[in-house]
Image (tube, rainbow, N blue to C red; front, side, top):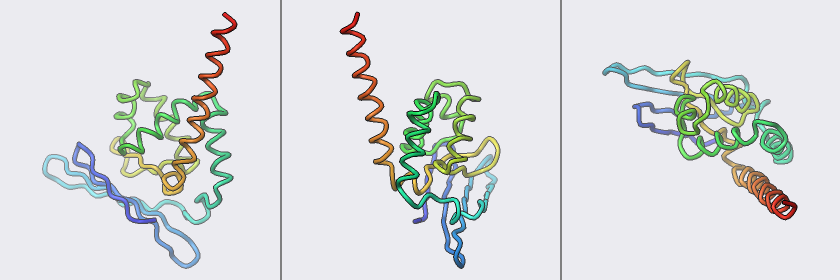
Length: 164
């Protein structure tokens, strides 16, 4: 995983780095922010990233299919993934941008984080979310799934219009 650095509008610099240590991959997230002329730096080491990272595309495709098309909140999770892809954001920014309740966004971010699709950087309210490396590498697969979902919705709409 190459080093990732992102800048946001509120003075936060964040990066994540995956390092090989022996046979295990370690995932570090680093965030630095300046508040009132004082700097704060967060460095977090996540759990052993080597055992939890998705290495085969088939499980990722099944996971995305289930999380996006197979569950009730799939549309919201897809919107979150698209928003985080365009620019890393915190939960409040996502809630404002997507016009969805903050607690709903937090719920979906927890699910996406649990399944290693997003990576949190920072602590508490300053946590900014980035796409994980496997998600970035397979973003075209996500686009295929969401486009099929949109196509199915259009077909269903045409069928209901014919019936009515």
